[in-house]
Image 1 (cartoon, rainbow, N blue to C red):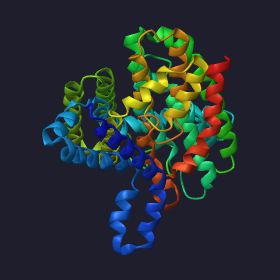
Image 2 (tube, rainbow, N blue to C red; image 1 turned 180 degrees about the vertical axis):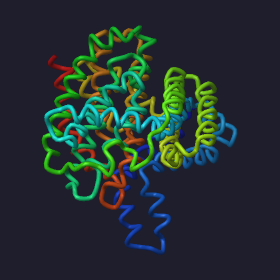
Image 3 (cartoon, one colour; image 1 turned 90 degrees about the vertical axis):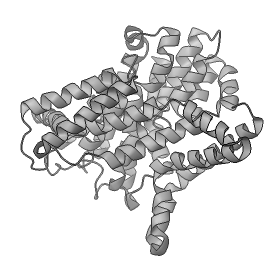
Length: 419
């Protein structure tokens, strides 16, 4: 769309959606205070609903201003591969066979360390699993880490400020932990082909710095959490469930690997997902309820971000193109808080003649700021959906997340700028 009227309307609705994101926790509180309208307030207080809701408003307004055909053409022109992939990988990664395998491995490693098992488990969830995202993709790492940490950290009895710090560390570490390869982090994926960045390049220029920042962030968080950690209901993560047969585990891991390898081919990974659903039905006794609702809400959020974000290029790209390398780093760091970091780096990939220094600074700033808000990085809505029940009013406050992520973000920024 090139209509200036539509551009301004889209920018205004994008701004309203951002304000709505920060107001979501207050809306959730209103649902408890006004039972008569609790359903409406609860719906509008769901962070995962925000961008999907305002994307629908945008399409309806476009239909009124530019015509139904133009509105539908725009909605159908967007690429929804990422929302679909996040939905699928969340469901598969959170299945009992996959989760039980990961949590048993974490438990075994934690018991070998000369430190309290819950403390080591929390550290592994905040450090090792985010780094694993470079292999299994960031959304899968976020799902596994969130479910592993939920009974340890995000539970009643842990102070809210500590939980927000842990959430900020998790989000930042997942955002930078995917930079060891060229395919796992969405903002890297947007530029890897255009700039010919392979996994060896990413590891040499970004990965080792990110790994050091991840270890520092996780260690600080684990130290601050040490007095509040207790063993979960079942350290194996199975809540008393019987061990899953190895054959079933192998099928689930193979399907997860297939989904990851085909992440950019929605027809293929959706076919694998249908096979996964059939297999879980056939062997239901080895399954827990699938997290379909949570994954659908996250997919709805990301799809809304795709629709709303697609019309922000007219004001975002001039800002990105007009900054010198160092200013571009801090500009990307700040802009990531108000727009998806993958969208930001994609705009940078369209700038002709951009220097190598600017390329590095753009991506470094985008991934360093990926934990500041829910919309900053694609896997963040998944973490919110899986962990929000551990917070007051069962809602994650945007202000609390921003404050919790500031420290880890500074560590990540220092690693990329100074090392």
